[in-house]
Length: 164
Image (cartoon, rainbow, N blue to C red):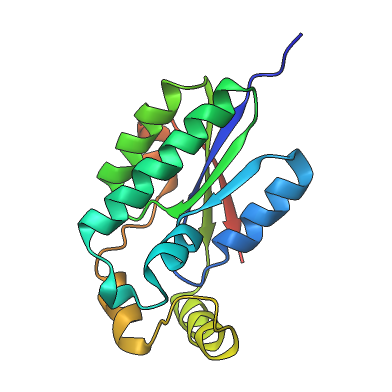
């Protein structure tokens, strides 16, 4: 019997540990890891101030195309995006459900000050990652809508919550 491929949708804010959890899931399951940030950096550089919605959408379509191809081959996929807004989560969940019946949100949560310190340190230590300073962090935090257990149940998401 052929295993149904899974789409894992990584939810969480900058610095909360999404990619760390995603890499662990990849190691455990063999799923293909698609990290939106990596595609953006490769195409447009490290500075989030240079990213427009149009640029984000180009990368989004590229990743969705890759994910669709991998699911069609029977491979599971991890979409390491963040899914910051409720409406975005709904949209992607519906999209993913059209590809496979096994769609899971992995919601990674941590104290916001810890997340900020991780992001600032990563910027300082790793020149291959996004430049995140306090201003960018605070600006992006205004758009972040954390997933709650109530939202997960209401929308009938299969969700695993992680604290880092």
